[in-house]
Length: 134
Image (cartoon, rainbow, N blue to C red):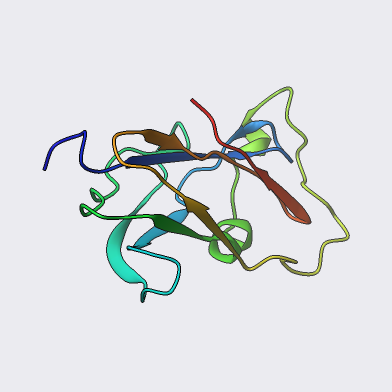
């Protein structure tokens, strides 16, 4: 598989509620070759200590659309002490939070052969933002 015949994808997740990488977010990758084609699950990964997925599966040749599915609810539901150990991060994301508003985030985007697509997810318990990075 040549880098000129297929696109490549990477991602990372930042938890903007604590100003740190989101560790342990499960990410699933799917691809399709055309807007009407069926999605082909390719596998997944989880974010590391830097909030990055370093081992997402390669895209098959002919991929035109990619979907990244982020499992947000397990991340925000875990009893994390990360903020407690960081002086400049809030100790509690939201003391009035009763649950996760977005239990999952699915990002779908178009790709072109030979290009790399880095798609960061900026996440907090009540919102998210994504963009094409570099």
